[in-house]
Length: 310
Image 1 (cartoon, rainbow, N blue to C red):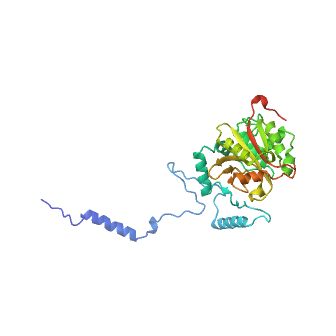
Image 2: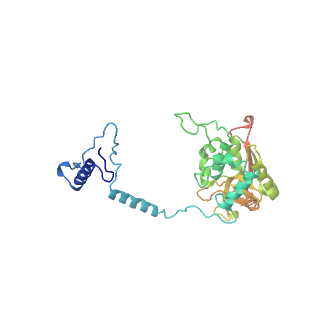
Image 3: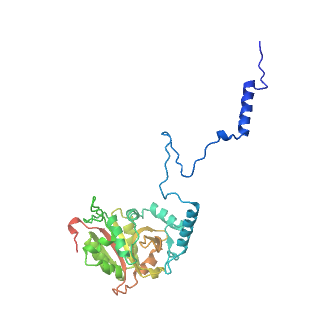
C-alpha cells in the first residue's frame, strides 16, 4: 500500500511550476507578438465587431489642447457692452431661494397656487426686450387652452396650432414692428387679448385700492377655474432696473402677504415673491405713453360665441 505525502505537491505539479517560471523569465523573439503598423487595420471576428472611428472624429493631443484654448478664449472674450442678469433687490424673494421655497410650500398647503401649474407649463422667456406684454399673453392663452385656429409651425407635417409672440399682432391693429420698437400699453394688451379669444377685465390702479388689488389676486390664485391675473407695473418702484413691465401672477402667500410674479424676462430677473403692497405701489406708476396709471388684468377664456378677431 502506497502512502501519498500531503506536505509536498506531486512531481507533475512541480514540473509545471518550473516550466511556467522559465517561460516568464525568457523573452523569445520567435514568440513575440507582431506589432501592427500605424495604418494596419485590425480584422474583427464576427463575434466581436469593432467600430472604427469616422474620419475627423479622433483628435490628437495637440488638437485637443488647441480646441480647449479656443473655448477658453471664447469664454473670456465678452461683448464690450453686455449684461448677464441682475441681482434681485430686497425685499423681493427669489422663487428658488430657501425662503422662496418655504413660501411656495405654505402657499401650496393653503391652496393659493392654482394658477401656478398651468402657467408654469407654458412659462417662456420673452424673445425681445419689448415683448413682455406679448410673451405674458402667449403664456396665458396657452394656459387657458384657447385654440388659435391658425398654424404655428410644421406646415408640411401636422401643422401645429399653438400660440407664439409673433402670432398675436397678426389678429389685431397693433403692428408687430410697433411692439418691437415701443412695447405694449395696457390698452394694447387688452385689445390683443380680446382679439385672440380671451375675456378681459382691465383694472387701472388709479380707480382701485390696495384692498381691491389684494382681493383680486387672492381670488385668482385660489380659484379652481381657469382664470389668471396679469400685472402691469413699474420696475423702478420695486428697486429693479427698467421701466414698465408685464408678467402673470402665479400664487399668493398669506403669511407674508406676497404675490408670486412669474417674470417673463428671465434673462434679467428670476421669478420672485413681492409684498402685495409694494407691487400695488408699482402699479400706481404713470405710464409715460398713455399718461395713466398702470394696473392689472383678470383673464379667462371667452365663450366661443364671444370670440372675435379684431
